[in-house]
Amino acid sequence: MQWFRQSNRFLVKHRRRTSAWGALLDQQEILLVALALQKSGAVRVMVYERQHAPEGLVHLSERDDWLVQTLRGLGSHLSAPQRTMALALDEERCRRGVFGCGGATGQQLRAEVQLEAASAWGVAPDEVGFDFHVHAQEVHWAACLREDAQQWRRHARSAGWRLPMVEPSPQAAQRAGLHWRGDLGRQWAQSPQDWQFSRNPERGLADVDWQQLQSGPLWRPLVACGAALGVLV
Image 1 (cartoon, one colour):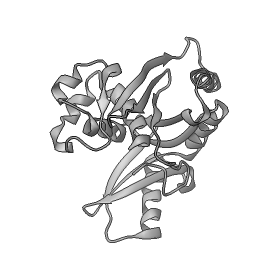
Image 2 (cartoon, one colour):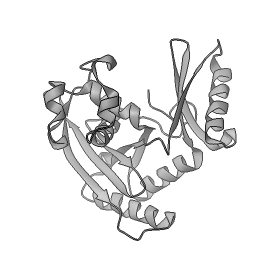
Image 3 (cartoon, helix red, strand yellow):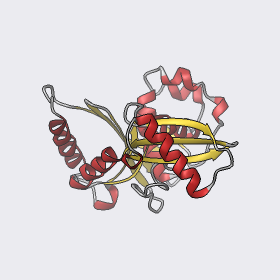
Image 4 (cartoon, helix red, strand yellow):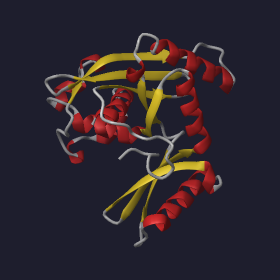
């Protein structure tokens, strides 16, 4: 599932595509990846780059202007259908949690998730954007501030991009790890520019040491790849 899709209709995943961009955004850097589906069925990394904000950008509005200009320049040579980007967020921008569902369903369950998410952020319920899924009688939820989600959409739109999906970084990284094509141990050592993925999972969650992976240098590019992969699979 794609976070922030069902509960608030912020971002809607459109029809399956053959190429997509993924981005990991923080205060001073954008990590960008473009993936493309090959005739062989593999998904390959076509573009991998980091964009650093210029020094001296103190105010949020200055960083926003830099972000819009970066995205506009990035998409200047792309056709409109190719300007599709999914965004993964770190823990400072997207909070997650788990609680027992207690038999609640439908609107009641959504209301409980919204209250839980709002409490985690310390804001009113209508100030959060959230989504969730139920697994083994547990509700797994993720939430960002509604104002932030709307702002990201405005930035993308003003730069000529579509933003069909926003999700937590760990979820994006898990998708990329599970769909990684080839021998996991050998692939970790490769440059992200050479990575390949499958449209179907290659392994299970228990087959990857996620804690070790998150503490290493490949976590951030893996997150960006996973975000783009979410649009393709």
